[in-house]
Structure formats: C-alpha cells, structure tokens
Amino acid sequence: MATMRKVADHAGVGVKTVSRVFNDDPHVDPITRRKVQRSLEALNYIPNRLAVTFRSGKDAAIGVIVPDLTDPFFATTVSAIESVALPRGMAVVIASSGTDTARERSAAESLLGRQVTGLICTPVGPDQSYLGARRGHTPLVFIDREPSGLVADSFVEDDFGGAFAATQHLLGYGHCRVAFIGDDVTVWTTRRRLAGYNAALRAADVSPDPDLVLTGNWSVENSALVLGRLLAQPAPPTALFSSNARSSIAVIPALHILGMTDIAMVSFGDFPLAGALSPALTVIDQDPHHLGIVAADRLFARLDTPGRRLPRRNVLPLQLIPRGSGEQPPSHLLRRNGTLQRPRQRRPK
Image (cartoon, rainbow, N blue to C red):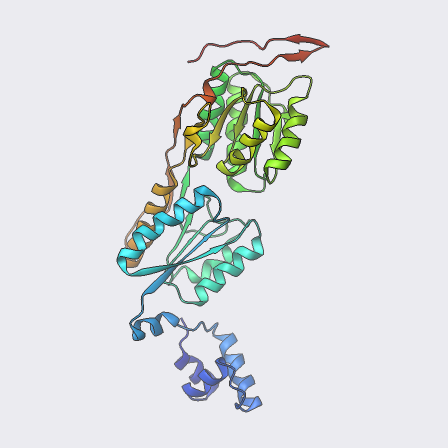
C-alpha cells in the first residue's frame, strides 16, 4: 500500500504538504496541489485511518455489507458477526446495498477507504473484480452468494439442493402443480433455487410450467394481486415454494387476505414466529446465525494467520423442518378442459 511518505517522495514535497493537500487546505500553492494530486492518483493512495485508531487507542473495525438489514436472514447474520467481532475489540461498520450494483461498489469502497481490517460482503452485482487490488492486504469474505471475477473466501448455502428438497417434499404429498415464488432471476441465489425447483419437477416426471414461476420484489399488496391471478388460473397450483424468507413474509398475509390458507407451502428460510402460524410454516432452515459465525471466524483466521491454507468455497448444508404447512395434501380442484378434477395423489415418502 502507498504511504503518505511514498506520495511525498513521488511528488518531491514534504509529508506535511501531502497531508495538507489531502485534507484540502486552501493555502497550498495551486501548482504544488496539482503535483501532489497526480501523485495521490498515480499511487492509488488510501489514508490509513486504522493506524490513526491504533495511535488513539480506539478499537479497529470490520466492514459488513448486506442487501437489506430489514430482511430477517441478514439481520440475524449481522448479529452473529458482531457476536464474534465485539469480544475481539473490533467494531462492526454495516452498510446496505439493496439490489444496486453501483451501491454495492460504493459501499465497499467507502468501507475500505476507512481502512477496515476486513470486509464481509453479500454480493449483489455481477462482477466483484473491482476488489481484486484489495485482496492482498484486506481479508475479504463473501456470504450467501459467491463473488464473480474474484477468487476469495465464500460461505454459501446449498441453494440448489435445498430447493430440490423443498419441491420434492411437496411433490411427495401429491402436489403436481407447485408454484415458485422468488426474487428477480438476476439474483444468484434465486437462479440456483429455481434450477433446483425445476430439477425436482423433472425428476418426478412433472413438466415445469413457466406460468407457475413468479419473480420480483414482493410486498403484501402486490402478493395478494399476483397470487389472486395465479390462483384464478384454470389449473391453479395447490402448493407454493417460496424461495426466500422475505417473500414468505409477504405471501403469507396475502394468502390470508385471499382466504387461501389451505394451500401447502414451504419457505426457503425461517423467520420469527413462522412456527406459530396456523398451520406452522414448513421451512428449509438456512441457519443465518451459523453463517455469520463461520464467516467472521474465517475473517479473523485470515487476519491471525495470513498464509494459512484454507478452503476458499464453503457450502453449508441445509435442513428441511416439517411443521405442517408443507405436509398438507392438495385441497383445491384443478380445472381441465372445462371440468373440475382432483389432482393425482401421491403417498408421502
């Protein structure tokens, strides 16, 4: 990393002059200012605020970037990261990226500009190669989704396998019409879970129906509207696979509004009070607390022993927790050729 001394030598000025230019002191000669600014850019100088915190006796910090802190999955993950970092005297600086690629990069560069000791990030953009120059001196750990264009530590869930298991579970209870509900397919986890859903259908000799795949940003209001149209189809689904907890939180009250609570449902991801619903929600348990713990542990392992060989890609297993909603047999009639028929039944495996 370029230091202020290196910038000073490159520009042929003193360290104090570099400091004054960097802090935008108006009393610096314009020609000298331009010379120093060119050196700052040429050397890609980043202020080492960490050294300042050490000299002042303040705690160091790690950065965490997640799409949405209101999402119960990411809220739990961040809390777990804090439980590892705080006892080590590390503060946690948190930023949210939404689904905006530019916002992700801006948040990452802002945190790294503060010279955090490490960064834990959920990537939302298609390319994280912009972090390549940082990897050599700042540990990077990615969670929930793998980075692209960059080799770095990552901890992800078995999205494909979890979706396959959820869909297979519903098929095993006699559901031939299973709808998929999830985020936009540009999201890495959504694509993997959609692939697992389709694979389970094909394995059961059920042809995937694109009319049963609903993706987008979900709220209670738009869920009631979209689900109402879906369930009014001539051959409506008798079961729903919600591919993330945030979508499930919107879909469940929408089903109550529609009076369709007897539709079988499995959620990819648990959330508070899911087990208190009636029927209680069957889930693929991601265990976000464990995800946060292992990610933070890996970050500190990289800090403590930088040269240690550790697996870069780590896939965490998932568990299906049956609670009732996913074990309901088909209760709705399917309309085919103008007549109402009950769907073909299958015995649970």
